[in-house]
Image (cartoon, rainbow, N blue to C red; front, side):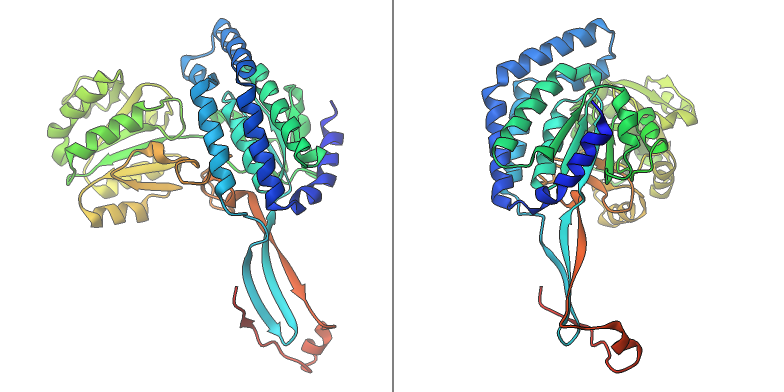
Length: 427
């Protein structure tokens, strides 16, 4: 397949996609959900074949967890689609209304970005989530999944594409790239792809960012932290810590580093170690930590590590300020949490930590588009331009300015014949 020619056709179809009514887009989503439910056995069979091939290829266990698409994953994506349908239309929203002068009215209106390329590794459920969000937000989507789940991705894509085009979406609403070499072809489509969203390993995301002129939104790492303040509640701290590390270790929002205030280390660390090791977590810490609990000794530079496994780094700090400094130095600006009963400490932590998500007394695993009520997410952005954190519908729209006049010309204002009044109108 010639990706460039296909994407150019998509670009031509993108205005039609943007102009579809919310009723058509929602009906297409419901049709896709129904198609997935009706073909569940076909999907599971393809996934089992992918899992078996990945196991034979020696794929790491942390990655294997992401390949699975079973009844639970199907129920999750179907629920995500149904929640997405309930959300308000993100398009044609008046964000600003202003009268520049009598009869000259300016409006800022939300609209789709256009053609979005999403390149993701491993997780086949990402294909469903991304497709659904692009459909709801009126964007055309080029989807390239990992080879590890090629069979599952093919079945999922075909089911969704056939359902939504039958429901009234243009033929260019979705495109699946299946060959590895097509990634580089896609990266070269800067004239017809408006945004790229990569989801995968650090090396993978860095490769995408370094080999394209297309704007890229995403994150390379998920090094999340929990800092246990001296004013902590152990009834909250232990369950939050165990959940953040073990609930789904392969996720980018799983906690990788525990920071503990020295004042409570002798009391807290043995309790935490017992709970964590009981949940199968291997502990690594500084030499100081190893004098309090049994753990593997690690060096300072190793705090840059994203494990995506049942392994946790531990360090002691003197203060909240030292914890913040460590997080801003070694973290990935993804999601970080403070365990404290002191509201001032919580507020200070949230102000000073430079991350997309800052939490108090709750698991970092909440950093997710579905759990934020976005319906789903195309990924998590740690950048600060356009979208940040879990990227749902709002992150997939931009805006355009509409100006209505009655024969107004700039010369009248340049000459002083007329002047601007700048009066905000009711939105």
